Image 1 (tube, helix red, strand yellow):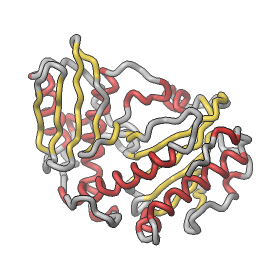
Image 2 (tube, rainbow, N blue to C red):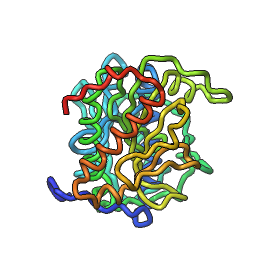
Image 3 (cartoon, rainbow, N blue to C red):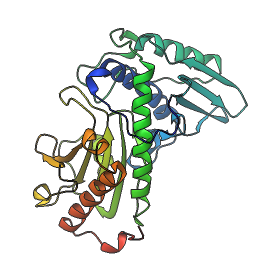
Image 4 (cartoon, helix red, strand yellow):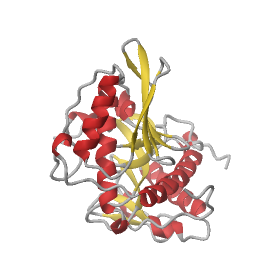
Length: 300
């Protein structure tokens, strides 16, 4: 991986769609292990991954009187399992089916004395296939993963700066393996109206009013990576706002503002462009939603 690259890498989704889909399923397997082991936290924050200098990792998860952590290392391309008793095992991140990855990881956990059972069905994807039966997804291109990871690190840095401008309740900058995106969410402390027909996970995630900004690497039906921003519940007039930078637009299909990653990557200052998007999205949602202006710290 190129060290400390000054430019933001190109991320054409078509060039790594198969690798992305496979990696998405691998992260879901690890995420479901964390869901099974970690104590619950509001808004499902206990199941998200945090960013490390080398990849993505679970939190320290309790088991058998100790704790363990599982980390994706995108520098050496290994999945690393470490425990509080000093043991460590790893699994190569290389071309292999989801079914093979699942079988190897669960066996490795059993060998380390970590007894965990998960529901082996993916979530938040179309036409899900059980992990232990999925042989269709088997791609892993090192260079593609490294480009995506470099972009994620750069986005993480900007999101952390954005998070630091807010003195109210805020989520960590964290990675959601269900939707395969990096996000940060601000809260104003007010309970949100109940979401009719929503499942239990969605009801808890949006139990309080929020403004959220995130980044995902692309998906079927949306060609390339993009940033998003939304307010939930969406205040009247929010969709009509004009955000910065100019290429940002409101998607009636997604019910959120979008900004193509390529427009940020090619901007004179990608960092400034992304900050402008996040700040203007928050300003629009906070003004339309009558948020307390004292929640924003303007020491930029």
